[in-house]
Length: 210
Image (cartoon, rainbow, N blue to C red):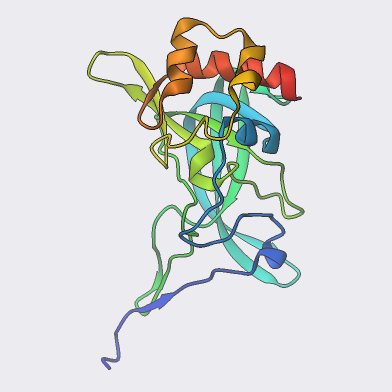
């Protein structure tokens, strides 16, 4: 082995050390439909990512790498949110070079990242005892907002919106007095959805399930 070979350090810590309840740092993540995303989350909002900063977090058992995000809130749906929200997720956005022999990359599989200047709809769980959070269902609770080929604002999560309404009974859905466009959204099995319809449905769900 060459003397200057690069050492890749994976610092995936056990869940009990981090203090966050995840479904597991693996390629298999428990499915969450829209109701589950809402009831598991403490804060739901639409906003622009305006700042990202990777940093070390020290705690009694050592240190971990994490990323601090600042969002400018454009629509608050659940939780006490001001004009901006700062939160911290476990893991780095990209590999970090420590020295000539050491690169750290410790973002768990399924943990989303957010780019400055882009808009998202996030379903965040509560903070852990270390002040860390993540979206409910990891990539399932993070929706990128963008313009489609018809210039419509649409939202898409990390699982391509698969199963957003899976296991939600028809009689349960009738409670929400859905519009025609919302009914079309509820019938979709995957793919981008119109942002306004998604926000409207989440607000209706929030009134029922909070």
